[in-house]
Image (cartoon, rainbow, N blue to C red; front, side, top):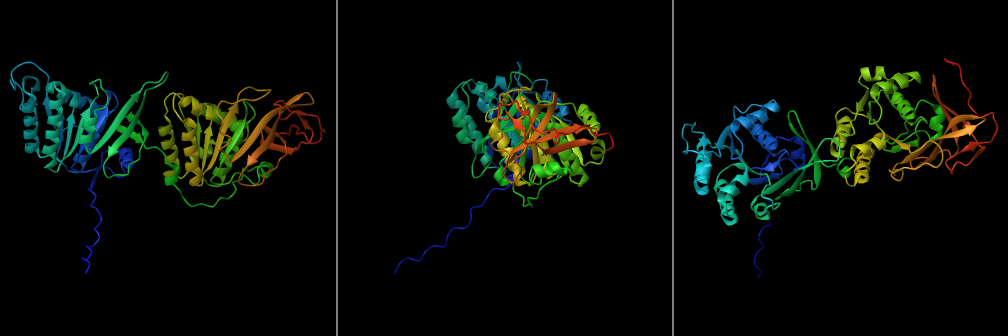
Length: 508
């Protein structure tokens, strides 16, 4: 008879996750770090390792845990300065200092200060282990491994001591962060990577112009399906702010793809009823044709419907924008005061793609914005001149907005005023609709024309209409059939005069 089959194995137990104290990093780690493991935090000086370590310990203090900071590279006073810059206190954090000073071990010092440079590395490790057993913490930060390398003076001895530390902590319910400033000059320590349960790498990048950029990457985390790749981060008052890489496929919200009206019936008819929810519309043309005003018309109409909307202004000062809008019968200030409309000024030299995407997500998920305007894409490009794969990052952001049912308006100026227009940022292929504005000449006057080049979501007019903005607002004329030279970039109208728009009296 065949032997009885053994029952199928039960599900593997997953270690409880421990928060790092940084919400964005916890999302990347799918909840946090599995507790009671050894982790490596590596990065060059200035990348944010100490701040991350302090946030990790402070999260433990807030949960009523005992925590320990072992420092071989900084004094307690230096750590307190870092903490004070973020409004924190180290009163509930046990700190062990191992200072690089001359003199007799422990002479004239408090018992918490150990002078390691006059002792052997093994003695230093035993002192640390003794303090851990005395304090009995649940979280430990060891800062930094570069000093241990100096003490060891031999790579083999150094690795043996790190392994001994791992074995020591493995028998205790302690989650440990090992800090490495990577100053050894030989890059990442692959042997050290293999010893640790997880590895997080922080980088600081210096651009040709503007503030330094920082980013974070989880290199490994055993047993966790973390978000791989680089994630932008900033250091603000209050600690690290990590912006997880946006994955649009993970964010889908059911919605009805209805058309959104602009408040100008002729404009809605031109676009086939208006942009649909969950689509992006590109407003393009040379400077001065009215692209931003057209976007403001949609924002105004959204607020009149009671929908919240957000505009990211990367080129123009907000005060100038509001003054110009009032001149065109679009008073946006009441909408701003009521909390319906939010206009954010973006400094192109201070923003990373990850931080920008995080701001957009907060507007959608926390404030409930239904319409997003980015003015302009050239400002977006200028904000991240050295970023790789910028178009892919923008495509991911637009895909996310589409899956959330957001109406997205993108303003993209074209270079030049007359003649053949060119652009160095071609995004028309992934926009759902493209609205083109152009200057044209008729009867000795410079006028503006509007047409819809494509609209994937609905049927649209293929006509060219005159577009004007005056004291009464946006005005769309009748179809103009007498155009020549539209595709050359210098359109000219030679048709009848009747369809052309004339000045209308104020208040008409």
